Image (cartoon, rainbow, N blue to C red; front, top):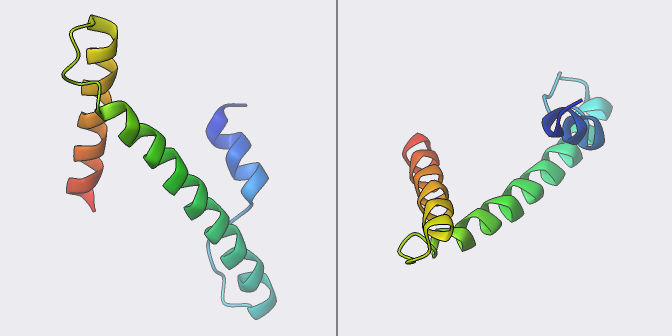
Length: 76
């Protein structure tokens, strides 16, 4: 089981099905997933500050994080 599968199992299904009781629970699951994604993106944003570092490993991490954030921004 990978991290994605674990998170999905912990947060539950988020897709609404048109049944009020089921959809109410799935909305709560969606809110939980959104909060998690927001926190994870914040963590990644912090790493972007290292993209101009002199240290190779820090610079690589910062560049990777910045590229990821830009790609996601373009998608949105």
